[in-house]
Amino acid sequence: MHPFTTLFLFALAAATAVKLWLALRHMQHVRAHRDRVPPEFAAAIPVSSHRTAADYTVAKGRVDLLEIPFDALVVLALTLGGGLSWLDATLRPLLGDGLLHGVGLIGAVVVITSALSLPASLYRTFVIEQRFGFNKMTLAMYIGDLLRNALLGTALGLPLLAAVLWLMGEMGNLWWLYAWVVWVVFNLTVLAVYPTFIAPLFNKFSPLQDTVLEARVRTLLERCGFHAQGLFVMDGSKRSSHGNAYFTGLGRSKRIVFFDTLLSRLTPEEIEAVLAHELGHFKLRHVAKRIVWTFAASLGFLALLAWIATQPWFYSALGVDQPSTSMALLLFFTVLPSFTFLLSPLFAWYSRRHEFEADHYAAHHARAADLVHALVKLYKDNASTLTPDPVHSMFYDSHPPAAIRIARLQAAAS
Image (cartoon, rainbow, N blue to C red; front, side, top):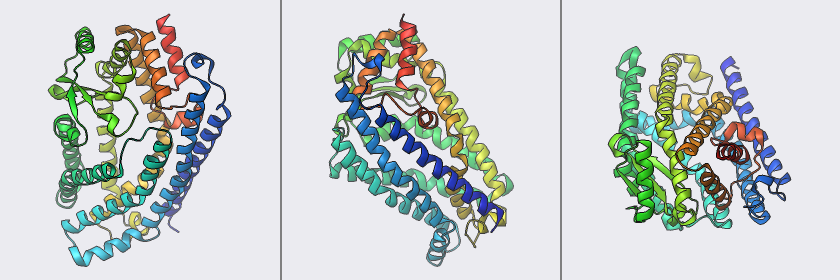
């Protein structure tokens, strides 16, 4: 067995085992605290709601316990099981050895893996979300979203993929640098056009009609020195009863979007506080920092791919006999998650740090008490567990645990 085969198997097994261990301890921890609301939330969240949140978390965890090993088996089937080699050999006589073959091969893998993940997605939407009263989607709407996503992915993804594969084959040793430039330009373009051209394909966006709330929001924006193209309400309730608010777009295309479900649950003061938190992310350049880190990491990964794609052992160690640019791309991004999973706590920590900073910003530009009240309502309405397992949270949670976050905000309000 090639040493890299052994290393890959170890990384895949370790990542899978840790994920299963984290899922199990998270479910056990939530179950153990199911019947007791944390003291800081006891006045606002009844035991019945706390139990519902625990049951919701456990129900999602059970799906994870099935999906985690299944995903690992899919990776093994594609690599050492010969799946990619078989697909490559099947398509080569039909599509030849050129660019069309590379695009077709990667496209076929995307279709197959997406189809394999579909049962879990359907179960989450129409069983779990339905059982806990969150799902508002019909099967027809689900299929419509699926088709729109597929068409959008094809329209945007195929030209990008063709460009990257062409650069890999034609631009010599520095192809990875040119591909990175294309990747950066593509992502920035999508971020810029998303609010106007892409998001409306899936949801209806209407100007905010509440004049009192609009005046309050405009005052907050002026106070924070922020300019937005407009204030919009999204019909999120047609798919889910979960609520949220977010900024989208770049430059002059920036929009502030409120889910209609959020507006129906929070007071104007609470909405202002939530918006102040989101403004904090922009004013503290969290979005820009994450974009820069993402682009820097993609540059490093592409440079690594450029080197490893020239190594014959990389293909043979992963069960592939016929090296190609498309196969290098497929193998690299198929096995990469197994090697990077243990870095998850670092990325989660960085995100949670930004959330604390945005909360601090919100506490100085709105009332911290209003943000606390808003968060408690959202935790309750979204059935978010108030008692996550600390280790699971350290790996996965982009936001701080509820108790820690609320405690910091209460300290800022006092």
